[in-house]
Each structure stands twice: as structure tokens, then as C-alpha cells.
Length: 263
Image (tube, rainbow, N blue to C red; front, side, top):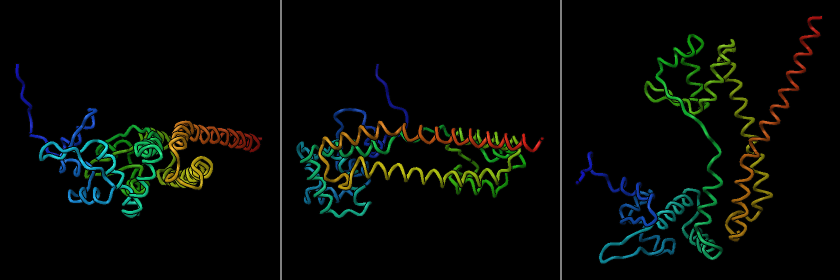
């Protein structure tokens, strides 16, 4: 029995985007350029400058692989960070000699993934007003958007974090004004950014070291990758534990003050 595909024929970009599943993905020149977000004419230029290996040729067709795609994305990213073409060529050569460009890509993925696990909630503006009632104004919504607690597209509102939404609703129902909740959120964001800077500074100084990533050996790269995986949960646990201890001390002091007042 034969089957036919219902729907429009996929574009080159869509075909390229779905080729990451298989172990032997192949891309034509236009497809790999589209998937990597670069111009087609840049492929030949990168090859001439030694940044990109030549494709596999079958007759008149040039086939590019997932390795080409990963390298193109890395080149694009490094250019966006201010590296020159010559600097990128030297960086790639150094990494190839030290253990393969795949290690650098793996390190970048390991260092940036897995920090945030959020459950977004989407609703209409009418549902938002019904949820918060008269406590919420358009000014509150605009400020929440500025703090990135919500995103607004037309008549749709999305809360990136269900947990923060539920905490906000609970505070409002206990009588805390939204203005003061947003003030507290602004303060918490500032303090969290300072904590993140401190942790990242410690990691950069004592795990990565002053040489940075460009001249590390394959063994050192693996050590950093393992360290990121081990330290990721530790950072959150330290902050949560210290906050819990601070809250316990503060609540205890508050209760003692209330008891003295009643005497």
C-alpha cells in the first residue's frame, strides 16, 4: 500500500532543519548555508581561508555534512563576538591540533544548557484580568514585561515561569500590592545577577584559568565539561540553602519582636 504526504512540499530550510536526526545527514550548498544562517557565497570564501573543509563531491553535486554545519555555526558565532577571519582560522587550527573542534562545540553546549527549567503559561489579556482582578493595571503589565516576567503578543500574554506566576497570584491573594511585588522582583533580579556574576567569576578564575578556552588541551576541556556538569546543581543548592537559613533567622526575629510588642 502506498501513502502520500499531505500538506505543502517542505522548503530547503525545512529539509535541512530535519536532517539532524540521522547519523549521515547531507546538505546541498544552499541548504547548509540556510541552516547555518550564512550567505552561500561565504562557503567558498571560508574554504579558501582554511576555515571550512571542502565538501564531498558526487559528480557536479557538493555535499556538506553535519560537521560542516556545526563549523559554520561556530564561525558565525565567533564573527558575531568580534573575532577576525584570521583569528578564527588560528583558533580552529589550534583546536584541531589539540583534540578536535567537536570538543569545543560540546563544551559550549554543556556550559550553556540546562540552567533553566521552566513551564510557560499562556493566556489572553481577558484571562489575565480575571486572574488578578482589579489589583492588576496596564501599568503593572508593562512593568512585568520590562522585567521579563511576561511577554505580550497582541491579545496573548505568556508567563515564562509557572512557578513565578503562582507565587505572584498567592501574594496578591494575601493582600500584597502588585506594585510592591514587582519592586521585590526587580530587587531579586539585581541580587541574582550579582550572585551569577560571582559564581561565574569563581569558575572562570579557578576552573578555566587565565588562558581562557582557546589554548586548552583536550584533557583540560574534558575537565571543564565535567566541572560544569557537577557545579550546575551546586550553585542553585547553595543559593536556596542560604536563602532558607536567612528566612529562618529573619522570621524568628520578626516573631520575637511581635511577641515583645504584645507584652
